[in-house]
Length: 87
Image (cartoon, rainbow, N blue to C red):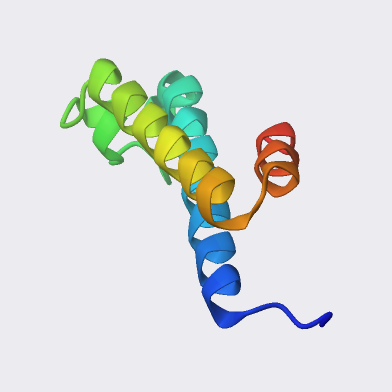
């Protein structure tokens, strides 16, 4: 016992990755104004208007929900809650 199955490891990695990606997308939403005035980030899709705020928020929510459901269904409730709390 003690060893994690490859299936559980796969779904844990996938779920945690999707929730983390959701956090990154939300960060881009909050930083849109700052990104538009910085030379390094001014050409990102949100500051350029290639992606709307509503689409970015919807994308982030979809990633969050799908990642959370994967963790809850294929891993366990504790992993889901700890991942969400780390946001």
